[in-house]
Amino acid sequence: MASTFELNILQGSDFGIEVVAYDDAGVIIDLTGYTVSAKAKFRYSSLPDISIDFGATIPSATAEDGVILISIPRAETAAFPVFQGIYEVEIIKGDVGMKIISGLVNISPQITT
Image (cartoon, rainbow, N blue to C red; front, side):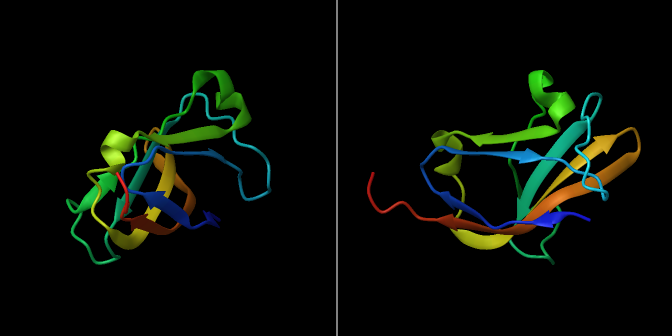
């Protein structure tokens, strides 16, 4: 079962978080050979093309430790619309995908520049 966690991203600021993938028994998943997808949508009913790709990666140096890195530079967050929506991070191997974490994502406006 996927964990739930709320993300707060400020427009125009760097954002980064590391997520560790666990299986249902609480054992860290070796992510060697996996790919990852991390996306946000405005709401559950949004069309598939109305989404933001967070560009998540699995660093090869920490793949055995189950580490997923989400790192979004401020140039990209500056272009994000202000909204509260949903996101999910999924690992994929072959034809099988598993949701690792999901929840609300809040994109807040930057007041000062």
